Length: 252
Image (cartoon, rainbow, N blue to C red; front, side, top):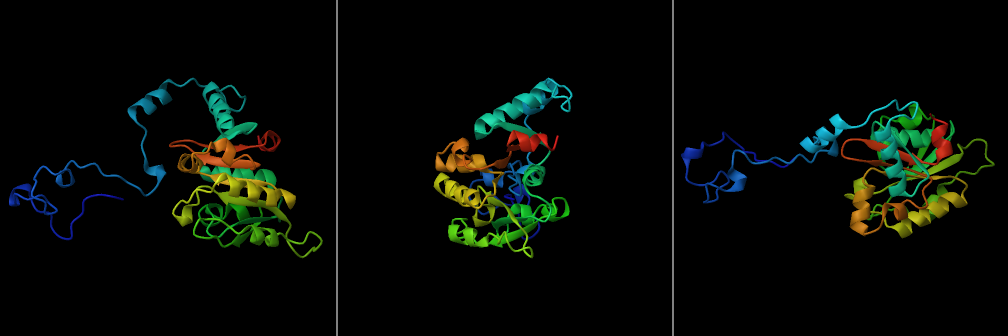
């Protein structure tokens, strides 16, 4: 969180002609008591603008269970269009988006290959184990947030060994949070997808910040996700999970 702070009692404005951090200008924006504070803890602490609140209040409504909510339907259609997928499903959080995708594709007892510190492993209450009934095999990543392709290949379990959990899915995170949000380019995304598919398993992309990656790389989201079988992404307020329609229907 960025904001003004002091190491002792705050001086009064009339105590000195200097600004509060020592500058000679009393009107300095950094010294102003009305300075805007920017909270960078999470995108979840943001608040909707008046225009957003008005749009919510005036939105067309319907029963989403029966597919009668035109606003949600348009959101799903737009999400599918932007990501290049056949269908999309609006859910309540990014965690739920990842969980929905895992449940649709990973059998109980299956194993997920992901990078060390992956959000689904470290920050989603172990739902991959508690709800999905799966395990995770974590691999190291380099300074660019990328797992080595050969390491991914070697991480696949022997399907003929009954003592090992079956490799069931490969997961990427784009942007990659723990490497200071490094964007994963389309060449790497496609290469990991090829490794996953050669091994007979799908690729899921935790795309909470996929639009940040798209902007940084000047690459459309649909291209970044072309090889993915499912993906999730976060908006400022809602979240969406996108995937193959047959997988999503099985959860409806």
